[in-house]
Image 1 (tube, rainbow, N blue to C red):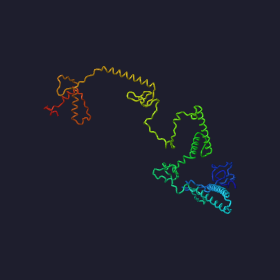
Image 2: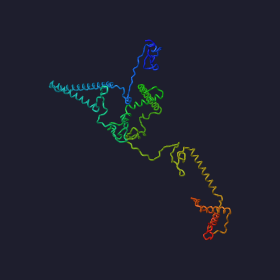
Image 3: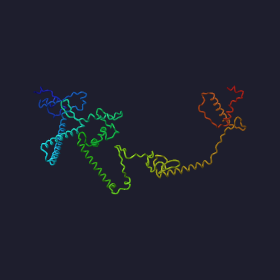
Image 4: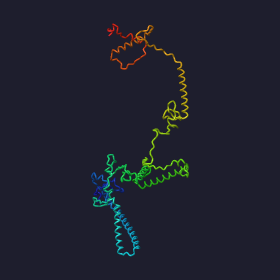
Length: 454
């Protein structure tokens, strides 16, 4: 084939299923398009046209035939177990027959053979019964797939067992997820643990190797954040080895720290004679706790004597609030302060308080001495007469004019309801000028001119 008649290759290797940029072979000086030599074959590209459910199928691409290896291994183990049980039964039967021969030598050979055969049948029946007893709770059923292969699948429970979502039909019962068939919480938390066969999925997450695997994951994450190249999914063996080394180093460091503390301070627990405080503080009362630390049985919770915390010192105080009383006020005995939640000042605060008290006492004495000679107070001139005007009355003209003006205003307000005030203030101290103005402006009923004033 000449160069001009060569096909248009998509890549330098000659394959038509990818371009030159996606080619993974060694780059050539001259591509297959120009040399027509060493043309690479096209890759086999499989296309899948899946529907909505097929794209979300977890078992898409799984070959059921691979499970036949598990079935074969299980059947071989069961066959070996049955063979071993049969050999053990035969050995026991031979020993029993030898003993019977020694006791009864007159037994015929035919009868012995019949008994041997009968015992062998009985042993085989026992083996079958033991096999049925072992798998009484786990039935076997045959599953037929679309490809024609069959396999043995074990049921997780028998049909007589109650489903976990039917254990508690209360509306507020633990949530059951029908998609994953999971119920995390315990449906019957108040029932007897010895009588329950299901306690929620969380009991499996918090027991067995699940906790170890969780700790391994946490250790791998923390190690990766601190700069170590470890990944639990990419290299699980490496992560597990690092975790084991970490636990060994942690225990070694803990033991070293413990030895250092014992060497420095001693070990009172290793002494032969225990102090009396520890001996008298021991008790044989048994107390049971749950996982959260709450007391289940054995020790009743003691009720507090007061709503306040006892022997709790705050703000550097050495005594509690209310330990000192002075002048109808409570305070702290250590610093003699009457302000609650104040910071303790100690002896310096006591000295400052005493100095302030002495100063206050001196000021009070000085004030009392100054009040012994009071300044002459101005006597108020108040009106003391009724309708009769005293003869020796002396009035101030300015004050009288002002009193007459106020009395006129009061009269006008009484006539006009719009100017009437809601809050009226009474003043019992009336001056002679105000009394004279009221008497002058008062309307007398026996006055013949009173009708002309309006």
